[in-house]
Image 1 (tube, one colour):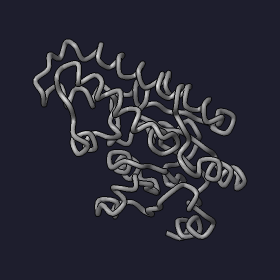
Image 2 (cartoon, helix red, strand yellow; image 1 turned 60 degrees about the vertical axis):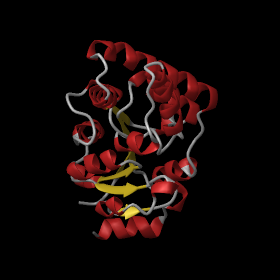
Image 3 (tube, helix red, strand yellow; image 1 turned 120 degrees about the horizontal axis):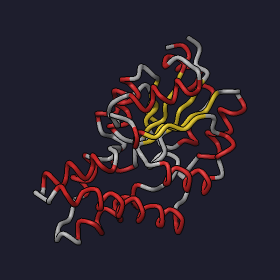
Length: 221
């Protein structure tokens, strides 16, 4: 099938929010006298907030009854941080324009809650460029399960095989590939040489590096 749709992850891919998520998570865990290392935090990147908390609350033996309130605290904190200092990742305007000019359908598939999605797309000024938004927040399964990508494709009225996904996390990459979609990974610079990215169809340094040649390569494979 001919590729005619692009679906983007959001956090760490379109908006430089991963440091903000970590800042909010650090603030929460400090209140419990705990701190996640960068390596620990990285293992749960891409998960929904509730799954992130479930993992670490279990790991640190924190009372699970406090998890719902902790989720509200983190999400509210991140929303405020994005409003204050959220900035686009390099190449966001380029990649949106690239696919718009080629009449691709454009979707967003993210683990984040709708309240944060609305703040981000308004801060990036891309609301009128996106035809469908799917949040895993309300779905039975989050990434690395493919459900959020499959829901987004359904909203766009396309077959998964017609979709290209852009991701920055391991869990997101697995979700996109499980959905039988092409996946382009844009990892953070410190993690760029990690061999796990070989499971993606392409790896690029920034969104700005995507071009017609790479699109043709994906169309032929």
